[in-house]
Each structure stands twice: as structure tokens, then as C-alpha cells.
Length: 197
Image (tube, rainbow, N blue to C red; front, side, top):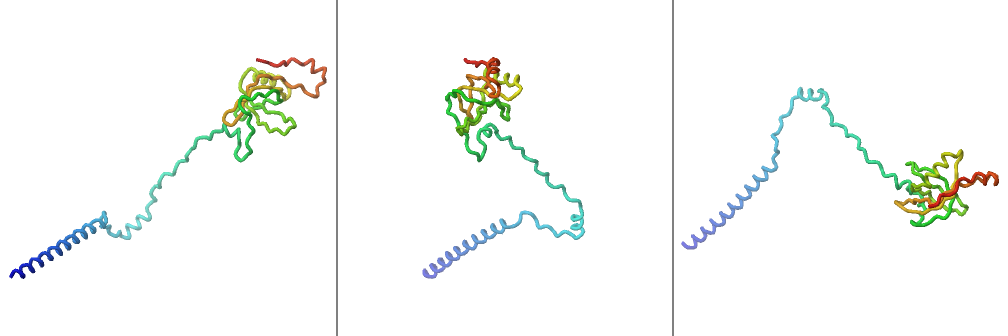
């Protein structure tokens, strides 16, 4: 009788395990079925009249077109110094003194006074230097205003450097005499003595 009881107990234990496994599978399947069901109820097929009305109805207003984007202007200050894909300018070291060079007073696109050097026959490629405002610059401007032609100037000054450009503080300015004027007339017209600090 004891062996029958132990056989019955083992059978019951085995049946309980199988029941637990089957129950767990049923719960998992029902949970999976719930997650895969669509959230909206199935729509009934629309009638042909309804489809025809939808096709013939005026088009819905489309989305608003995108407005153009405005980007801020690029900084032009450094572009006047070195243009892209152009050989770099020869910069003069800050603090250098230019003893005497011949140049013209020109203007940049922004209207700044600029000293453009004359070629000296030595194949120098000196870029123009922006003239720092002082009395010598004012004197050059007044001489140009009163002259009936383009003037060249003998200049001397100290060089500074900023943002890839050279600047010059003029310390000496004299209008260059025209080579075509006779020497006697040059002596008479010498009213442009240099301004020295």
C-alpha cells in the first residue's frame, strides 16, 4: 500500500507541474495576444458613394510652405586682407618703422583711408596699409582736396598689425613733386613742409 501511495503522490506532483506549465503558457499567450491587437477598432469598408464624394471634394488645404531663412551677413573685415585661394599678403612686423616710401592715399570699400605703396622696381609686393587717423592723414586729405590731380606722398611711420592687416601711424608726410615740373617752379611751390611730432 505504501508503494501505491508514493506512486499516487508522484503522479499528483507531476500533474501539478504540468498544470503550472500549461497555466503559465496560457497567461503568456493571452498577454501576447493583447499587445498585438490593434488599438483602434477595425473600420468598416466605406461605401462606393462615400469614396466618390471623398475623391470629388475639394482638396484639403496643404501645409504652409516653409519661410526662407535669413542668415547673418558674413564678416567682411578679414576678407579685405586675404581673399580665399589667393597668395597671402606680406605682413610687416608690428613696431617696424618705415623710413621713407612713396604712396598714394586710397580708400577701402568701407571708406577707410589706405596707403597704397608705389612699386620701387625691386619686385616688392607690399599690400596697402590702413592709415590710423591723425593730423598727418588730415593734411593728406586736405592736399588731395585742393589738388587738381592725383598726388603721391613721401611718408614715414610706424607699423602695427591687427587681424591679418597692417596699419600705419604716419609720422612724416610730404607731397611728392611732379617730375614734369621745371626745377625753378618746384622751388617756388614748396609750401608743403612736413609735419613732424
